[in-house]
Image: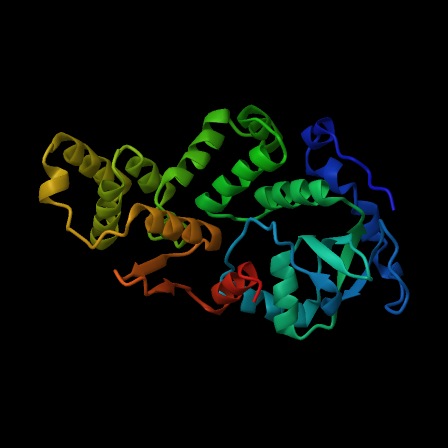
Length: 304
């Protein structure tokens, strides 16, 4: 089966050019194909939930359980109002491009199938469509947005200017989100969990040393500092030349090689990792998760 190649000019036209105009198909939603027949490409039909796979390139990492349960209750009463978008795979399987929240809530609601708009795409198209679709429609946190922008650049060969153009953002906005990825993984997790805001995180980037950033972040959370107070804290840290030696609590440091492994695992799993290694080579790895959905996400990342 041949695949159509997507061009940058098509991306520039917005998400409508990527996903196609599905308004007419939505209007004719009542003409669903029968479940036992293979769904037609470009159509909207009901697909068994067991035939749908989650897109591993989905930028969103966690879903609020309360919000999911509320959506599930609504789905029980009204069914799915807006179809999800899927791509046709082999063996009558489909992969989500957009609508993972609706997909998860439908499973909670006990649905056996859901309405879906079906299309064909290759891996490159799936990646681009999934990232842009979610960036435009989902309330992603700052770290997820930064990761999605970075992936559009590295995996779709786009510059910061091109990403900004696709998303209708200023280039400086894209740059600020990507810069957040320079922060230590534990601080990125704090941003994701809304313990600190993007404004706090941007202020922390003004500190040169990681240990200063970690100490300041802990202080921000403990004292519930505003962004303005955080900026004042950063200025005081920068003025105090002896700050690192006098105010930062000493902790047992991992060898550089193992610290790098710890950071890589934290970045890959998007959660806090604690690696402990003893002199005899024995050790342990502590992986934090924040709810059942987060645990499921981590297990999927680990292919378990």
